[in-house]
Length: 398
Ligand code: CTP
Image (cartoon, rainbow, N blue to C red; front, side, top):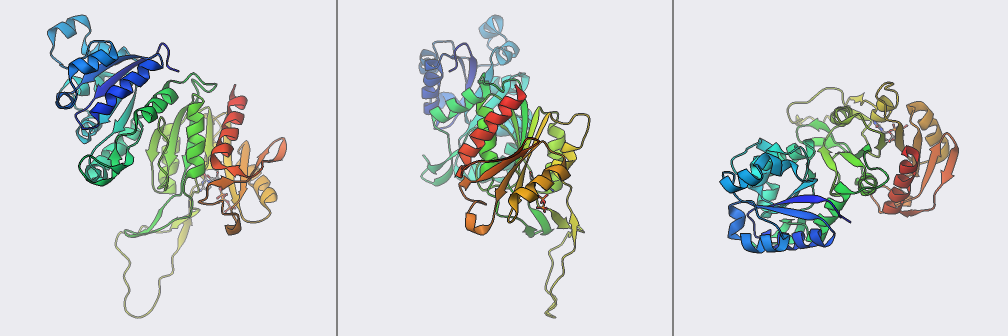
């Protein structure tokens, strides 16, 4: 529920703008006060009158409106909310935000705010997939902007793919997660997830079968319990959850740097399947066959152990450090030894032998290993494992 919460909704100029009227309605139904801001382009799709009628409040449109400035200046507008939501967030608005532009009311408010910002991108799929948009997305994730969607599906332009704005209720869920007063409110939790990719040369890489499902589920539930979650993810095949700060990385060394930059945290959950090795030397050019039939022998160097580094960092160590252990045999013995070796508080051990179907699958059968011993959990969906683990974390932190 959003009773007493103040949400500033910036409507960008896209065909999905009509759905934002429903978003305003849904937010108000849940008790939120909604202040709408329309960009010039948005007015091509929805009218100020209908927006204001649904919000039950004045619509802000112009940076240099003298009446507005006298009543509430744009700086005050940017701060007089608990959360800023940009829906639809067009490619242009994303670019403005990533570049720090402030040439209209919406972009100025977004640059001046000291509150969290949640965006619901919507655009043609080619625009979404364009490297410039993906670069902007990564920049915004690093700035702590929360992202919901976009979804895949048929688009107004006749194409099919990623780019449809998330549905109003999905955006509401992101807003609720961002504003929720759960048991972890005020706590910062770091979660790593997904595989890492270690380049062999510019076109090849070493990877593993992790899909990122378990780490994503853990981050989603922690966020739903009210935590501020920094989600450091390798190239996973599942989308990151809405309402968390996403930091995308590729290699183990980048993941370590991102984790260190995200500290301090009250707790850290290391669910990523980090590659243990990388190439000993960087290979700037593609490795070529020389026609002799001779095959290359790759020389590896060991990657930093992120979990062990954070567990043993002394000052600034999160109060609770949770690792995962992917084992194929003697699961409990190996995981217990791993907990001691790495110095973490808990290890969530799982059997990733191919016959279990756990790695890359939707279910998990885990054993939680702590100073109190080993506790077997029955096989269940990764979402339920995440819920149980997050509840334990909440109990340990409160
Ligand atoms: N981990 C990490 N950094 C690494 C390797 C692993 O942070 N370079 C973390 C994982 O996120 C996980 C835990 O360490 O939480 C255990 O990962 P796992 O792959 O099971 O263990 P390894 O360290 O690879 O040990 P081993 O090779 O003995 O299985």
